[in-house]
Length: 357
Image 1: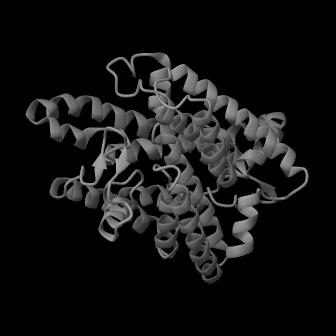
Image 2: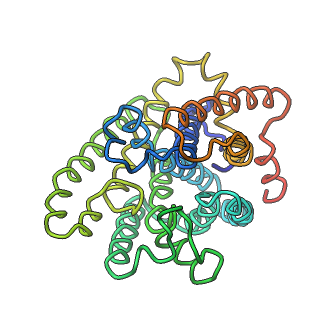
């Protein structure tokens, strides 16, 4: 969600990555508008309806795709020069931390301040080989499972209104950041590291793009298949054990990580494959894909602000939340297209470059 990297295969920018970033942004807006507008989530027939299944499939997957794309940008930057990448990334992480904490005052489920720590830790892992990065991804998932089995995941949470009681205390902040927040470093940094691994592939080649699509489908099928088999068995032993086999983002268990990686690979692979065949559509949506930090803040301050003024927070059908999200995304796409005719970067992206390099 940081300033979109200039990514080249030969001399041509891989616009498919910006398309993937745009689609991930749309997915996040849909999920977030559903959280604040609809009360249908968690009802027995939520996933049984087509809309519920669609939104349920987006939960956690869209955000994971965003983080993987951020990892690709970080990985490509690292290929250009490690020393400069570390200095710039640390400054940008500080910028994102401040911006995210301010945004948290408005929207509890902010992801930006988590990004700051993904980047801060991730940039120092750039020298690792892909094998060691893979082992690190495995390790952070194992650490999270151990934490789940030994610590109280519910501590700090009021699940009725999705608020976190002691977020602004040192202990609560650290717990939320690394363990039981919306997007905790363990295991979410694994998505960033997976993106770094992808950056080392020849993403401009069709064989790699097709491999991402096929690999993504396989990963998703394995994660969902294992979950479907294990969850009933574990529930029969102890209902709390069933959480270990879920592919939902809360709590983010290993099968969720696998599903998130699969979804990101699928989306990125498809977007790279179709980019050359969808030039007309790309010209319209790519500016939005390159201004996602600005648009993310806008969907909270402006989009949710308007929803609140209209009295549409809570108690709305899922269809209303979906329409509102798509309407906002359409308007945001038009704004970004017009803005790009005058300015090279979105306002917050430009501010970050001015402040952090």
